[in-house]
Image 1 (cartoon, rainbow, N blue to C red):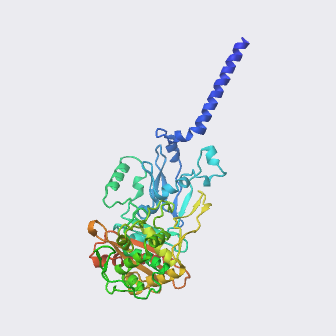
Image 2 (image 1 turned 180 degrees about the horizontal axis):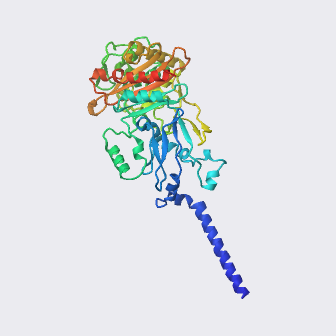
Image 3 (image 1 turned 135 degrees about the horizontal axis):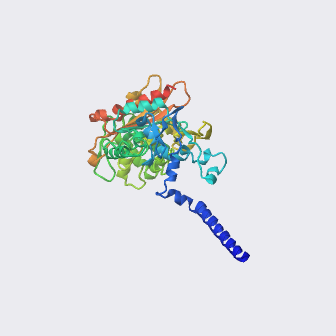
Length: 485
């Protein structure tokens, strides 16, 4: 009898060991796969079982959470949703997350190891802490000025602090209320369908995810290349450019909208926006030099994150000379996000040092203690300091005596550049209105802000559609908000 009991006990012990081994296998090797299985709702239920951390502008939360009384206990809410949608994105129980809600999801949901009391705590316990908070670099008054200036027209505004790279405003219109996508059910599905079917693309973040031909605003990049390459030694000296200008190796004639462009100096070409001079200078710099300078400004950068991903701005590296001429005035295949063009203005204002743009100032635990602080860092040297000084003078001349007079602010040093970008088949589309600028208060040793504005559907005749007519007043309002402190 004792022998049989021993055998039974050994068999039970073997089965127990097998169960323990299987449990360890599931917990150590298959846990992630089981967590990600769509049939497993436990992860989803746990995700919405506590309030989500908040996204802050200044010291005020622009997000929140509300109890639903349902299985998914907490649902995302938004304060001034359309105003901040290009910053926050949405956090939806049905459609997932975007923008900051996605990039900082670990912090906001409480799973990020930054929030854990001990290293690897969350990994061992497979638990989560109360959701942390994400404090943005956005300045509310500037965000509101940009949003009001666009007035619902298709367009975008990006504003930076040149000396640090802090993103002070990020607006895209028309916008949408992300709270309409927060929960589940027919109303959310209907809102999703309607927003995605809208011709105005309200969920497209035009400030960082849409690229446009930058038109004449790109002439600042071409001018930097020409000065750094010593193709132009004296920006006030006449050039040998005819007007109109025949594109190299073609019979295509490039005209000028402005007067007085024949043999105009670089400074005059920037002031009144001469196509011929800048196209000719781009060809003289050459493809390699132009591509290199564009790259220093951030063009062709694939990995830019703020921390949300930013669309790649393009300057072709394989072109014929006639294509290079057009690219040098911001046409052909040259494209840029509004954030990229704000970076161009910021690099000029900051003496040629281009700072890496960032949207998150710091991350805090639920009790407000800072667990991570974002610091400023250099992205690249866009141009030499001497070239930056010369471009600053030329951009100031644009505002004081040229096409950018609508951006002038009394008692403030403002530099700018207008742009009217052609697009569509045979340039048949209504031109995009661009304006890039920077501003420095008289009692300050450094510029306060750099701004880029693009308006897609400026409903006006061609003379008023220019960046000076449609976009510069918006930039001025944003700069004024920045200077208010």
